[in-house]
Image 1 (tube, one colour):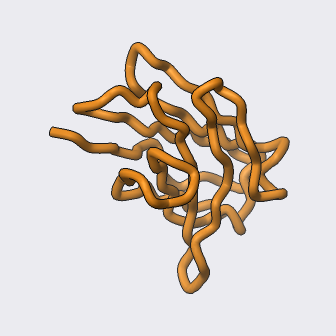
Image 2 (image 1 turned 60 degrees about the vertical axis):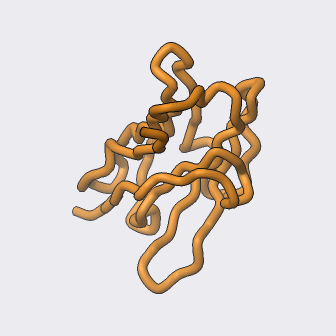
Length: 116
């Protein structure tokens, strides 16, 4: 089955960290740039960053730079989003996609809640 699945979300206190995973099945994720996006309740979707096929990260969300880091494990067809120094305003559903424009294959999202 061809799909993309995000995981790793949860409840974390402000200042804490989470590592999200974006796992591909049925296709090779290393062939694609991978975009990370998020959408908070009542707000528009935000593009966080794009991890290129050369493993360079292009940041689109200023608040993510310096706190969020993307990486790949090609043997597992998985891309990660390491999120540090989390803030309550990072609370959202986080998605990955097989491009950086929200037009590729996408997962169902994983919920991140940052709260004390």
